[in-house]
Amino acid sequence: MERKLIKHITSELSLYYYNQIPVVEMQHRTGSAKIALQGAHLLSWQPTKA
Image (cartoon, rainbow, N blue to C red; front, side, top):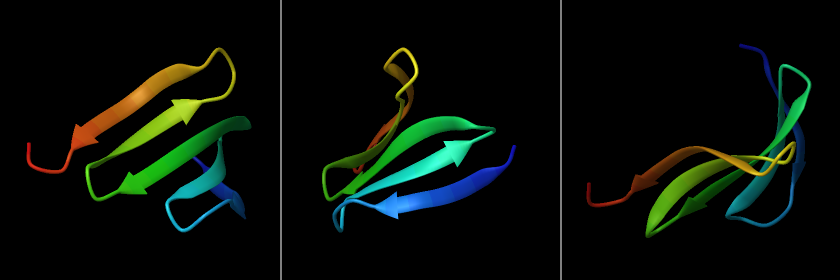
């Protein structure tokens, strides 16, 4: 899967293309997530202490 950085929005949020689909990635002290902007699908969620 091709992953290409589009923009760092904040220190915790970044926007990437995954095979031409825009995905927001969140890295936070409480956990991390990936959300596809096409359809707002939650692709990944991982709590920090899991």
